[in-house]
Length: 376
Ligand code: MG
Ligand code: ZN
Image (cartoon, protein in one colour):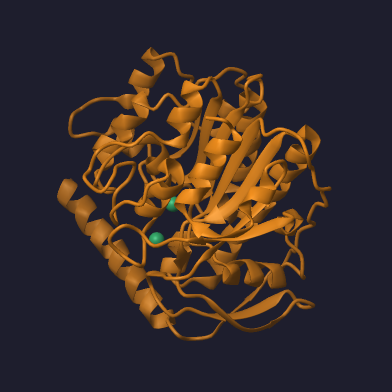
């Protein structure tokens, strides 16, 4: 059975890699059939930072943003962010980082080795923003569309020098003390070599454990461990607005804490479609992420004490926009790699404290700035 699964995985990876290679350096045209309305929010200034929402578009560069802006007829929600900075993403032992090391830099404030999550260059566990915020009495949340053992959420909730150590990373979630967890990957929590059923263990710890959005939506109490798919969630056209819905649900529950909250929201699968050099699916993911940005900014505007940061961990695919027309919602793009590329990534910010995020800085500074502004 295991052999069949391995062969199937190998086959799927080979097919995707071959498809990506056949698309590489070739022009792809994408047209957005149904452009969406963007929101307009007014800047908030001069108030204290009570809550921080860190939004990570995995593998999202300026080129992804400008492509998505063009396809949506010349508008994006992210344009409401008044301050923009640039983040240097290289990791401890490589110029071109991966999501593990880059996520760890933002989650813990330390550059670590390629492929590591939540540990230093010697493999020692590091406390993450979710740990530190929780220790100070804030509520915490992690909302992603990938399997929870994947590198970005793992950098906030687990500790391993090997991001592929799925069983260990899944087990670490039990001790991460995060109040609201949403993502996929139930396979790694229930079908395990060590025969543990981690979802049952979460129940014993007092967590609500909904296994679909329908089961989650009416729950009024944290802690919540919502694992809603066996692996990654499906493509945007199939999963609907669940990234935005789950993010707003997290905000609804976490904002009950008078001391504030820290929430990480990831547009997880931009990276996958960058790797696959698939412009169509990539744009669907960027737009899904941007619609979520819009909903979160509208909430932050009303709240007035929430800092929203929207950034990326690195670029994926070496996307270049070589043509298009915003009047016809059409873009022409090319990819130059099936991997990640080396470029500074934008950091957009909105709300109190956002002025600290202008300029050019290390990805680790994102941790330092959040820690300072939340007085952690
Ligand atoms: Mg990721
Ligand atoms: Zn990647």
